[in-house]
Image (cartoon, rainbow, N blue to C red; front, side, top):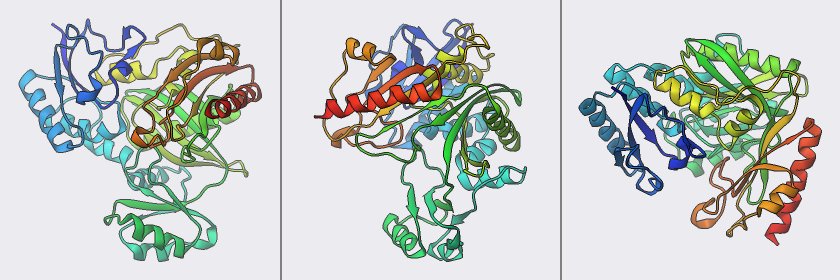
Length: 402
């Protein structure tokens, strides 16, 4: 008998597949899918016989529906890979005594203030920060340290981030956003490059990490701009970041799952913690990790949350192969983007191309850090070679807009 599994999905249905291959082990689990009505295109009723549609604008209604499904169907595991569903899934697991990420740990991963307090207590360097319970808290900030960042404690996709350089500007931003007490934090702006580390953790042991460097900060979202990252070749910096990842997941008491860590590397060669999520990185990170390491992060996350051992999708590349794989995203710029042809992608050295004409919504403007109109996966012989190819894509994008 297959294991009944609840899948809470805010993503398009195709994200549960790698091409034609379903990432869910359908021979071992019976999925009960809960999704948005506009995301069910392509759902095969023979594989997904138990599909429920909900308006995800109403989180309470979605959670009530999921609670009933768990109770009525003897659900034995919950999969939820979208950042906004992490808390809901954890609350359901805790309430129904199901295995996986529990509510107390999930709150550490979603609340940026609690998160930084926990990792700082374990010796990890973090920015100077404080919770914002009211405008008066802004006066306690040490503005002599330079710029600061105001952002939601449970924000996603680098949304609603405000960089401020003075108390007066901070007060203006605070009054404009009208945030309730405790919903935002302020932290020191850290200069330098940003990196990410994808990790797979089983029973508290990290057995895979992939370290990448952003070629634009995730918060630098602008119409027509280029974003993305590339995976670092093996080396001292990559190892230092992987070591920080191990300390962070230990500090947060993370048991099993896939993680996405972000960290600053300062001009003084310091590593400073930014944040970590208990889900795979978005925007194509899973695709470049698959190309470089043969590890499918989304599949690993699904299998772990289903209570199954993670799988390696393809044989890993040899240790001597230092090919640099990465991703380039081009944000929408206010009008429908033109799709590249296969010939154009071939000329630009693109291995994978995702065209997203609906990016930007009705306004055609980027809504979050992974809201790309075009997303490319490509490789280079070195970081410099990769960035040269990325520059060619940027130049091509400028031509498409004319």
